[in-house]
Length: 146
Ligand SMILES: [Zn+2]
Ligand SMILES: [Zn+2]
Ligand SMILES: [Zn+2]
Image (cartoon, rainbow, N blue to C red; front, top):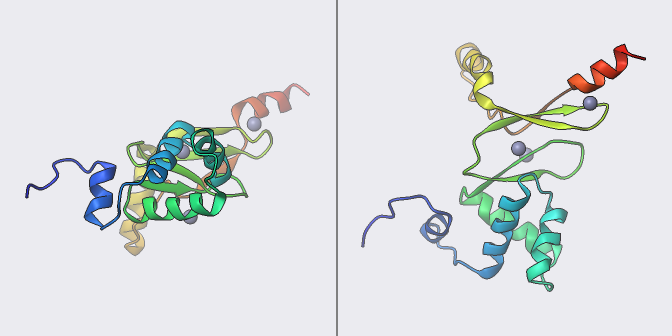
């Protein structure tokens, strides 16, 4: 037996005793394709290939993929969480409260903040999990020209 050299998604699943099923493969492919897909959006993509898959199957599959560490989720708006593939670099979502536009920025910009949390209270901040709300530059420009 050789150790898997990469943490590929199928290796991660097998390590935890999960089988590689077409459904899991399709859901992961949909997460990758959509980048910020909600469970409903992921279902729509999966159903292009497998029409019989329903929403509760998608939810269960997302839970498994998340548990083994293949995907993560984040909260962008007030609705359902969105899902990311783990290969994506950790980023922070900036959400405009006026037009709803979502801008992604590298989580590295939050390093001083993360370090401050650790120094002050020993807290390890999962900075990609929530989004920062405010007003995008377009909406600010529009407001000044009114
Ligand atoms: Zn994102
Ligand atoms: Zn969450
Ligand atoms: Zn805006």
